[in-house]
Amino acid sequence: MTSNNMPSGAEGLGISGNLGVWLAFGSLFGAVFGTTVGIFLDNIALGAALGLALGLALGLAVGSVFIARRNDAGES
Image 1 (cartoon, rainbow, N blue to C red):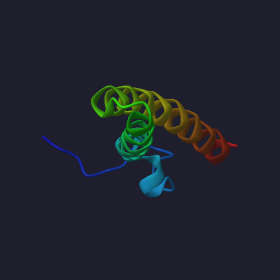
Image 2: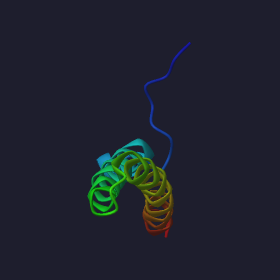
Image 3: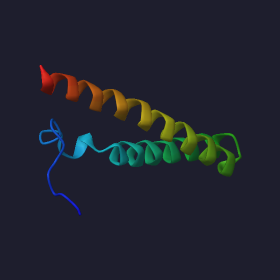
């Protein structure tokens, strides 16, 4: 059986509480930044790949911290 009930504390998070959104924005930023750097270094594929990897890591870190802070603020 499935339940449509949200976990406690999740009702006020909105779209910014979704880690997938943070990963998508991080990867998009990383790909654009990496491609730009790759153009200057004459290796677009390497720049885009490194930028994508760094962007995913950045999105994961920032998203996790942001979600954790919102969860802590909502429980006090």
